[in-house]
Image 1 (spheres, rainbow, N blue to C red):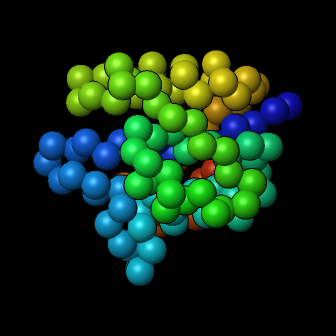
Image 2: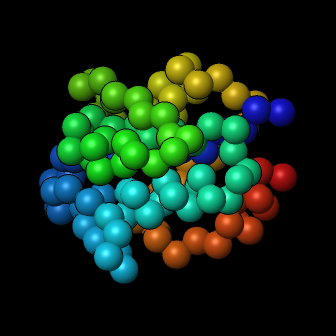
Length: 117
């Protein structure tokens, strides 16, 4: 069974631009979330979907991370998450896809394993 974990992080939040880069305990939210997914060792692939080169560069040194550039049409406030998830799965086919919202930085890896099972 192929399991993909993802974090979706746009640059263009209207309420709080670049909120995904805000530090939480000294680490950008998006980076912290991706590291949690990788360290859990529950995923065959960990993917960052972003429209921002800055967000991508903040995370590109994380080993075992794949970065997918989100198309402009999937990077607006009006686009729901499901089309973004579909874009990830089209590029990284899998049996199970788990998305972790980096706006909730305190998430034990047991939550990931429960969600997968």
